[in-house]
Image (cartoon, rainbow, N blue to C red):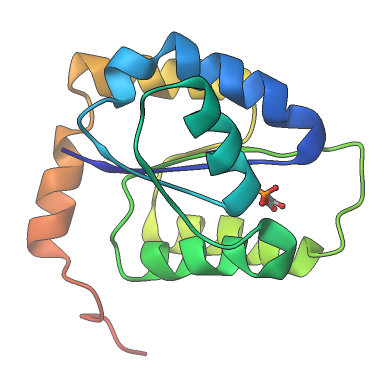
Amino acid sequence: MFQIAFVAHDRKKDEMVNFVTAYEHVFHGHKLYSTGTTGQRIMAQTKLDIHRFMSGPLGGDQQIGALVAQNELDLIIFLRDPLMAQPHEPDITALLRICDVQGIPVATNIATAEILVKALDRGDFAWRELAHKYKPAGEELK
Ligand SMILES: O=C(CO)COP(=O)(O)O
């Protein structure tokens, strides 16, 4: 079981719902998280149980970033809108940065999301179990 987060900007929410619906069988059985509205939309369309954080502009990206900082997320599907400025742009940048700090797979478009979910289905995320085991949260203090 892995921990997976879904985040989608408004003009990407339909795409996210369609994507998660298509791969519902893969996501089933994992621990799922999302920002507020994204999770609401996915749960209305699927049978998945998702722990919803706050809406992105109200701090949801930061809450998901906190899980990443603690090495508690294994995959993030973050369908960003590259053509629309967001009021919480610094939060978005911070979330992507902390994913790079921790080396967490994050898909920011549907093509990458497809590849990662197929990898998840194939069992290619087993290395994350080792990451949990050998890199406990807070080990590397600077
Ligand atoms: O703004 C978001 C991510 O930056 C998404 O938030 P919602 O899922 O609440 O719309």
